[in-house]
Image (cartoon, rainbow, N blue to C red; front, side, top):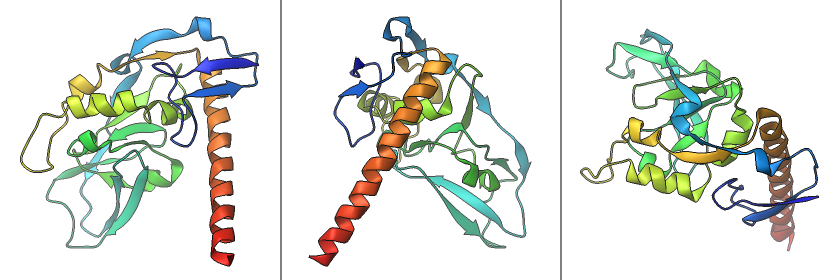
Length: 206
């Protein structure tokens, strides 16, 4: 049994404490390396002409709440000549609301969608696990970094400086350990969600 102190190293999903117990002796915390985000991702673009007969658009929710899809009907398309296809397992950010933690890891359900230049995507290097980064991006340190990387503008529009975002530093283990940790927290998150649903049903009955 290994106790991981997550402060500054491994952010945990919002439902659990900053210190967690991982029951797996394969996790070697002494081998973790300091890296920058820009060292482990590449910008991803797959540009296509903006469809005139309708398409599916992907958005990114604030507060790291994931992505969402909406249909764009003919005549409602954005005034850009090209859009980018979405690929699964990419880091994606809304550059206008990054300061509000509008960041996510794309899933298979998003691969049917298109996005504008306001939603840059980044693919992970082969030695990185996207599942692990689902929890990295929840960290309050990353949220604060996005806020600092978004200079003030009019109202709530504060455009992200992508180069500054990519300077974010964090500690990361080898890929096998990333996968173990990502899997652990995914199961934990699913279990918490299940109990929350049971609690909600119980509350409605009483």
